[in-house]
Length: 196
Image 1 (cartoon, rainbow, N blue to C red):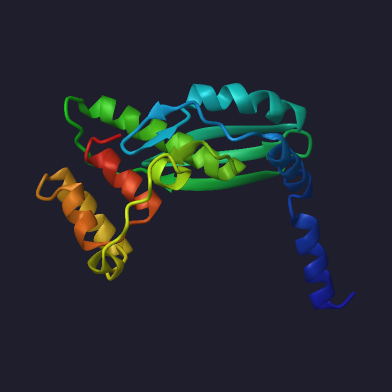
Image 2: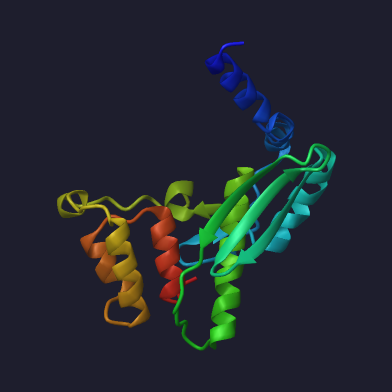
């Protein structure tokens, strides 16, 4: 074999084929998981509701997962039990967040639970929340011309917005009046603002 052919062959054989096949089959069976736990402007399924639905299907397809703390990050590992193949993702948890009426340990626990839910949902391809605007439960708010012209919140601005919310020098509404936020940015800022 030529070098490029050998490289392509090795790459193809290194792919976690068993895991991808089992994960695809799992995704064909897993339903939308929505138990109606209320958040700020949306509803979602909490971890026990998610586990109740996914655990039997994971077992059926020979899949498992674990979520481990790695310093200030949450590592989510989805694995194929028989082959040992795995996919890993790492989510950095925001630090120095203050939530009204909660001590530092409660805030950390809330943050870990929040990120566990979204990291697992992302890794497995689950649908576990329903934005009321997107779900049609409320008529979508018409955006004004001024809102259409808002710039997106960059990563650097997102970090500054987190700090400003933590220090209570700005409100989430003030940030949303100046920038377009992604769903992930908005939910993370809502957590910091104590608006779960």
